[in-house]
Image (cartoon, rainbow over all chains, first blue to last red):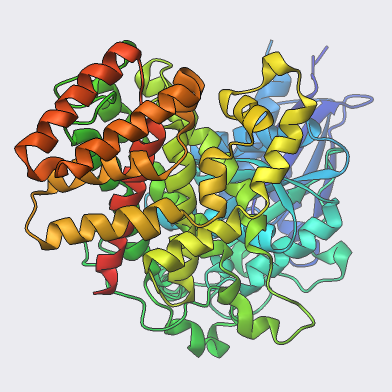
Length: 89
Length: 508
């Protein structure tokens, strides 16, 4: 039992990102990326997100990213916070 | 301490909560600075942000949107403001975009709109162009996300745009000697959204120091009035007059609490001035807004000022009437400042009258609908006897001040009278010249007659300039205290007289 709870971090203000985490079906992590700069930065956002998700050790989490042009440091911080909240006992 | 990211989350939740609490036909605007964190956080733009937020509300009011409430603070993520208006989200967003594009410093602010259902109409869905980068003019988001420009490039671009705001400049020296506006202040120029087409905006006058100066004139007027002695029936440094619930210190505490508000009234006037957009507006197709549309904004600020007063005095009403009169004249002065600066008493009071036009009829029509027990003293007096009080005085352009008290004060001073004596005598004159609802409410017509008669008698004996006159004033003090007569309305008009007198000196 991985115990992934629903959590959010961030906002939909410009230059920020809203990260929503919830339980996924199965043990696989799911990643859904939405961004106003998907064309230019979609691949980069995805790879940063995968890296942070793996580092957190979470399994069976559905991670949704709604990006409003956040800097990479902001994206990392929001992801970490959302995952931390999702895994908090 | 809260981190900027936490502060932004807090703001986001507050934004959704505030929006959700609004009626369906209303929208919430959120205001933040649009600049890199090192500039946004302690970069010296907090004060400017507050001014731009004030100007945003003035802009919305001119656009015909009713501002229901607002708040402003500086959080760990920088300055932020919320403002609830009556209006449908997309329509409000269009006007927010107009502000971002047209205000000289609009490129440095983000004005988002949230509907009560939580949706946030954006530029794209309205078919409006995206925001531009302050450095290169390309679409902003990829530039920001990709860190396309150096910190130094961003800093100098931000500074250049902030300078267009004139008085809003971050380094503006607050104590700089205010100078009279030499031309018209044009806060909203056609091309302000584009840095290179904005030559006209660079000549903006520095209204900032003058707003502060006018605010200080009002603060000074409040203190001067409190300090004058003797003032029969009123609180002075050496007497509580007819009062048992307040003393001189109540007035000082109240004056200190109200001090910051006067400049805010001035700024509301500046940002509202119809002249400020006359050129842009062109001819008849978009007529200047009615000055009276400013009044709801003033009333809101007035409620805030009253709250500050009550909390400073422990719930005692020291300056409620004065907040109305002086707040109104501060806003009127602000409008005149934005239009080029004729601060004559007639111009200030006349503009004040335009702002409150129709107030007697409106307020008392509302009063007639109330149950008698819910009416204020002033409302009861109007219904019973047609007494219009300070509302009527303001709507007529403060004739008791402009045509009676002010000429008297100036004459006394030019004849070499000491300020205290000149003000004490001017107060006597005001007791004879204006309806005072404070007196009427407590002493009725009989009380009013005796106040007028006593004041007239003291003036006839030479006022503060003869021994007999001063003796008569001493007798008035004893009489008013024992009969519990307090000419608070006349005292407010004395402060108004001082204010208009101080304002007149800006011209010379």
